[in-house]
Image (tube, rainbow, N blue to C red):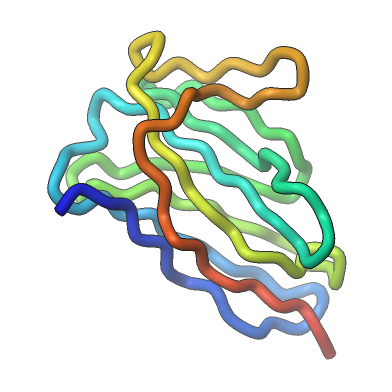
Length: 126
């Protein structure tokens, strides 16, 4: 089964850090770009960060660092200095278009996406 699996979410106090993982199953991420999105209750999904197949990246948010380890078939998103407004479900998506290059135009972060994960919940609360 071809899919992405996110992990690493949880309950964190303000000011803390988390590293989320996005692991591909059934295919290799080497030639795919991968982006992270988040969606808070009642809000639209928003792009957070993208990393290209060549490890170039676009960060839509400060405090977020994206990286990839192709040997582990995994892309990571580190979030520092967490704030309550970071509370959301975080999703990753993978795409092959444009050789997996990151783009941002007209409010759209990369894509179209070939694969999506089911999301991991991040809750920031004291």
